[in-house]
Length: 90
Image (cartoon, rainbow, N blue to C red; front, side):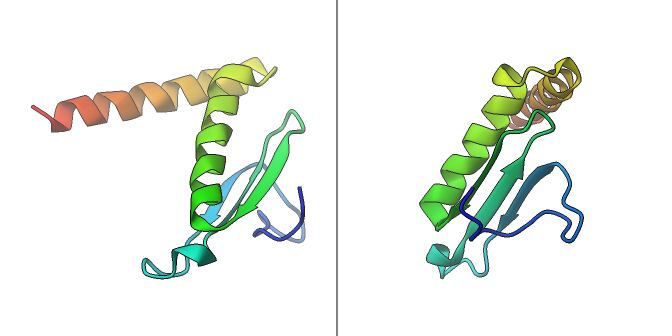
């Protein structure tokens, strides 16, 4: 973590993913940070880096996190997302 990105719940930070894109036209102003209860934390600045951080954070929660409750919740969210995407195409 390099400390440039936004913080989650400052002054008492919590766990989760926070993304901030200031405007749709100024994509270089994007920033994100991610903190997991297992201790993994990252942040990113810039649109492309923010997009990659979001992907890494969700994959970590779903596949790599050592805490079973976090993995279960992420799996449920992913299944709901897949269901909503497949139902829109019909």
